[in-house]
Image (cartoon, rainbow, N blue to C red):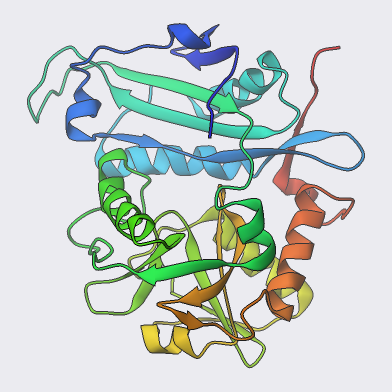
Length: 310
């Protein structure tokens, strides 16, 4: 992934991409006290561009900040505009957005109650996070030796910078072992999620996923899948389940803003179902991409349109 663009929005203005720098003693760089979002913009078949579920993503950014007690010095509408302005400034009809709020370098120390909060929004063109081949044929996963954070140890419903070290070490572990993604269990041994994606399994035509009240992040793409499954008449159950249930599932797929919908063909060297994307996965994926990239008119409230300059 090459992060290249002309402009980046930072602290209220668009600046040249290469000038978006921070001091090496920036508080969040040392302690991880900050929040971020990942958002995708799509171009549909009719040529229109839109940011997918922009309001929901910005709302979650503010909720993440509220969870840790970080005050963002802008309102939601301002940051929504910042996202579309950054896409337009870079001439991106589609792309990936990364808003982030973080503490500056006024002082170090764990308290640092008076440090300035900075906000930035980057945008660039980003393809399939887990690879085009993985999206088409399915990926290989491994159960991580690292557990997903406990709900009373860290604030698992926020996209909080420092908490992603948990995901980074799990991801690096399985990549070095030759797999594509790590599946993380909670501290009780139940399947939680992956390093940057929510997980679904399919058994006997029913979609099953971990409940919102467990250790998972409340993914916006996860919420999208639950809604689209309802539109398609596919039954959904939210409950705890174990790794051996995954092994004998008919289908497994992951979802997230970056990963979109990615099938899983193998877990811990065990073939899942027929070893290829299954019927339910394909149906949900077709509906999802029809809504975001195709001509499916469903769920127009999810699409925040914008227009590039002529």
